[in-house]
Every structure is written in structure tokens, then in C-alpha cells.
Image 1 (cartoon, chains in turn blue, brown):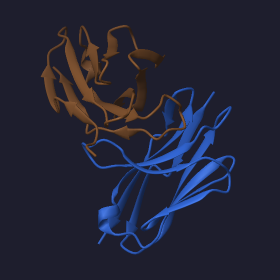
Image 2 (tube, rainbow over the protein chains, first blue to last red; image 1 turned 135 degrees about the vertical axis):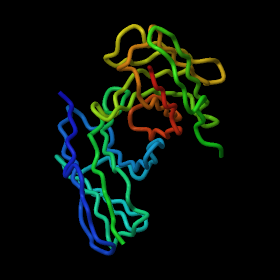
Image 3 (cartoon, rainbow over the protein chains, first blue to last red; image 1 turned 90 degrees about the horizontal axis):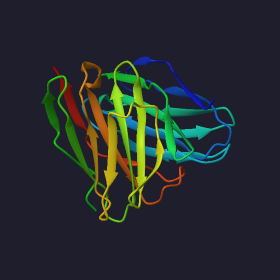
Image 4 (spheres, chains in turn orange, blue; image 1 turned 30 degrees about the vertical axis):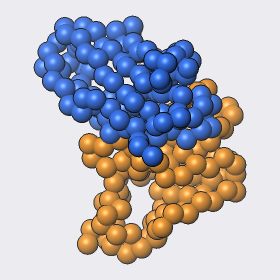
Length: 108
Length: 114
């Protein structure tokens, strides 16, 4: 069964304190791993798509990496505006299968 | 380019009523997917439409239905509302129906069932 697990559930960091979020997955045939950011009461905002092991993508303070079993979202020197829930999903059979998300709080 | 729009943004209904939600995809996108998001279950796939045809359906009861029009706009309907249907309903669009394409989400419709 295709499955996505994200850890930790919540993460509190001081401004400038770098860290990583984890997304582990099991899928019969990966058709893309997607990272989204979601602010309270809003729809998910697309961040990255990764398709093959070894692939990396960057955007501002965020960098996503992919292995055969997991993906990491590295956040470097975060700012309070990076506070949000970060969601990971895998493409499978015309739909996205989602993890539960990591709630990231950056304190000034 | 305009993003995905959803109307209404907020709805309050009572048990037993029915509701229709609307979604307009990004111009040129032919696939529309619907998701339900709740604190307990997270994001769950409802169904996907491509070129007016339902291509895939999640594990939801028949009270949840949808359709897509020739201009790619989509509606979903929930009949005989239950308290547990209270959720954020999200619509996402993409160019094709393949699962490798990125989905772009609308702001959602917050449905409250009393």
C-alpha cells in the first residue's frame, strides 16, 4: 500500500536555527514527490517536485532532496515568515497521497 | 495568470441539507481534483475530473459527487450533510491528468455543518 509518513509532527526553532523535515514513503512506482506549504485557513502552496533519487531543488531558504525511500526539506536560517505546515505527497494512480504534515514554528 | 478560484469561501449548513461547491481551474488546465481536509484525517482525495470525465475516485460515500463542465470548471455536491462533513474542501488543477503533473490549489471552501 502506498504510504507517506512525515516527521516530526511539530518543530519549534529559533530564528536562524537551521533544521530538516523528513518525509518517508512507500510506493509501488514513484510518479513524483511533492512538497507544499500551507498557512492556516489557506490552500497548500506548491514548493517543489522531485522525480528521481539524487535530485535536489532549492528556493530561497528551502532545499528539497530525494532518496529511494525518503525526502528531506532542509530549511537554512529560517525567519518567522517561514512558519507554516509543510506537507509532503507522492503521485500515485492519478492522485496525490499525503503525509500528515509538519507544523513549523519559527520564533523571533 | 489567475490562480484556482473557489466559491463560496465559507458555508454554514445544517444536517440533512445539501451543498454545491464550485471551482474554476487555472486557464489551460483540464484536470480538476477535489480534496477534503480535516484536522483528524488530513488531506484526503475525493475525485478527479479530466475533460468532463471522472478519472479516479477516493473512498468516500456516494453522497459526495462531482462534475466538470466543458470549460473545465468543476462543481462538487454533498447531499444529506452530516456533522462529520465539516471540513475545508480544496480544489486543485493541473494541465493533464497524469500524476506527475504539479497540482495547484485554490483557497478552499470552509464548510461547517451544524
